[in-house]
Amino acid sequence: MAAQNKSRARGLQLWRNARLATMAEGDAGLGLVEKGAIVARDGVIVYAGPEADMPSALAQGGETTDCEGRWITPGLIDCHTHLIHAGNRANEFEMRLAGATYEEVARAGGGIVSTVKATRAAHEDELVRQSLPRLDALIAEGVTTVEIKSGYGLSHMHERWSLRAARRLGTMRDVSVVTTFLGAHTLPQNLGDLSVPSEPYRDKDEYIDNIVDNILPAIAVEGLADAVDGFCEGIAFSPEQIARVFDKAKALGLPVKLHADQLSNLHGAELAARYGALSADHLEYTDEAGAAAMAKAGTVATILPGAYYFIRETRKPPVGLFRQHGVKMAVATDNNPGTSPLTSLLLTMNMAATLFGLTVEECLAGTTREAARALGLLGKTGTLEAGKSADLAIWDIERPAELVYRMGFNPLHARIWRGQ
Ligand code: DI6
Ligand code: FE
Image 1 (spheres, protein in one colour):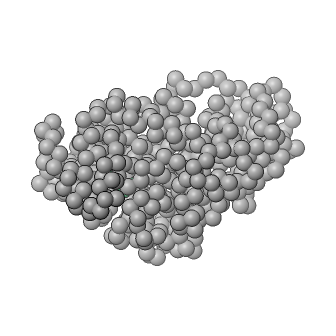
Image 2 (image 1 turned 180 degrees about the vertical axis):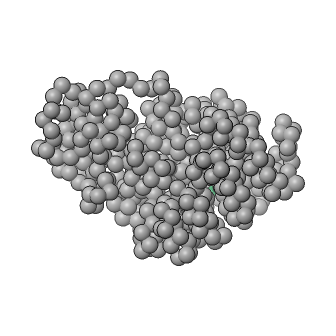
Image 3 (image 1 turned 45 degrees about the vertical axis):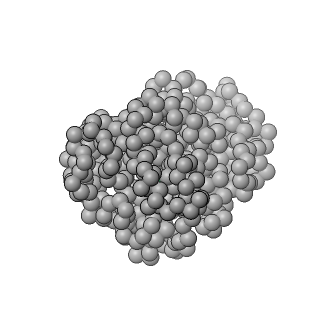
């Protein structure tokens, strides 16, 4: 994942006179440290805690930044995005505002298929060009790690473009990019694309056959995907079809995650848990058995308030059940052109609090520690602790709650990725 051309020598670095929200698991609440300091060596934290307790050997010879009392949190992590795509669906949004139904929009050439057409027409360079501003918007708010899914290509060649474009974005900016193969997003149909010999498919099963037998193994061999996702829904794929994709992912040694129970309860949360998924995402229709299964499997619940808001969903994810069963919750933008054209993780936190009743602590953990856990990266980032990457966000705020409280205001002072 680390792009060689991005690493520069960093030596010893010290950030002092700061207030820390370490978000460390063992620490109470946000892990607040009033007069705090962080020391990093070669981009890795070697000390985070009270300045007074800092080993004196570490205070010498490094590059020192006086934070003037500012707050430092872990760099933010957006653990669920579809930010690689071409075009947008603002026209559909206007049609819906004028009263068109989803079906009418689809008949007029809209819906997810329109984004697949635009993405296939774009080619890899154009995908990079169109997607970079979305990545930059996230970075501007202190994001240091972002997950990016494919799922708008839906053939080997076009999924490959998307995942390669995602990896390229990671070399163009000081940010960690984690990629996810989402071939099982929707059935590629009505595309009129003669460049894909296997299309049109007879049915969804035939497309799943192709994913399992050809596309996913080829993507895995090229090392283009860090994980495998699917959309388990009546309008997408059944639990049985998703299970076939997950069986192949497991055989290839790739972790899985799932778009689960977003529009109906197909028991996607339990399916994800059965496969030891890193996360199950959306979860508006998840029931208690689903929450219990996730807790047992250690599957993170990724909460996506942007999609809930944008499609005017009324059913909320069962946050109370997640708390009761001890399911960890991450919070992410779900940036995508159809149901969540959202590129602000700060606003997403506000939505998670206002719409779903998450606490400030849950929102901040959800975009740092728990988002890292949802990506399988908790050993590397997501908290301010020795041994983690020096991924920091430095904020002009008086208290951490301000990060959740404001809407459309960005108090980021500085952002550090791997010490730079
Ligand atoms: N769930 C969603 O909300 C999006 N994908 C998914 O799996 C919708 C994607 C789109 O409409 O473009
Ligand atoms: Fe999504």
